Length: 472
Image (cartoon, rainbow, N blue to C red; front, side, top):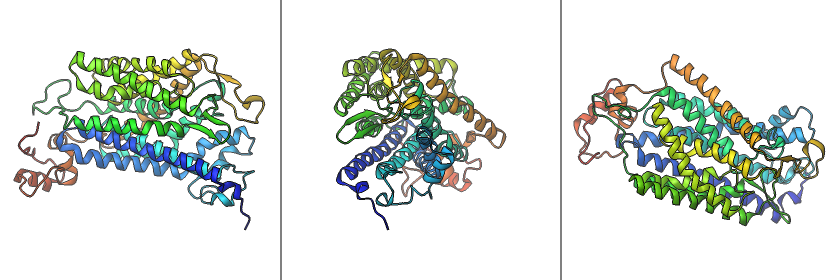
């Protein structure tokens, strides 16, 4: 059996390991989102929130592993003139494909260079699909039925999330090749997920008691805001590692953006922290002025999102200034949603609004910066042949929003006709933990009998459960 030792050299293994750390770091984002939701949902929905989030993330990741990664690899087959580029990508990169299930040392580097890195990058895409579904779930917690969420997870992971990556993220993707620039997955993660949530939150309706009092007195009550701070810090810890995975690390040449923009590893991480601090400072100012602590807790995330397309090509001053705008954009987006009576105070204000503004702002800030192409190629795929412009950034935004919004609306309408997107009102009042799982996340051996009564109903018109003392 022929082996290729250059595929498993020390440098190759080290590079693959660095990308592995970046891939695993994305799972910390899922954990951070779970902690944020745990802090903001009602006490009686904490357990079901975790179950739905983890299950949706796993389905999204598993479905991408079935063949979604091939959709992203399609762009490279096109650039290198591979016959039947999409079909060949599917043959190579579905879960049982030749490249997917073969050790790197047995793959010819002339055909599959840096095989270990490409296989690890498959995991990076899987975890990104997991984070996408975790973020989408965050926008519809406490009221979405499991089945529609899980079907959407499969469709997003298998087709839609990698399709946005194919269009907007990569050095030879169709839109990157014309000037669209991304770095930290703003288009396939934040803009895509934010658009999906916007449509879904519109169709599913607000939680009981959000915009007008409910006869039962039910209303959204945060369980423990301290968990929100813990979730934000965990995501903050993960982002610098994810930024490494969002670029091209070439031994002996340096670190480049995913579209082979001129960059540097140290500079990129400096930019990450500058954007983070900008969001944190403005978020704290808003929080103290409005006496709203969630802006101090969540403001740093808006700084990271609004600067996500700029991290590889900007500088710390630009990222700090743009990061300061993150909470302001989030605040304006949240106000618009309230005016429209769309109950979505997290994902759209923190991800979609800043993601769109940041992508467009990058088009102006770095207007004319060279991007796209691949080393060694000429003509339409020559390195740096495209330039960043505001209008191509707008095209990328619209493409990502259309890829999310249209399928989401179609799926929502289908499920509305087939049984609904939302749990029934009684289940929402009792709480999803008891209605779906027959138990309370905070239960003990002396739970009131009314909890057991609701449990026996198993979600079929159970009586409202008596809250343990001390519940808000």
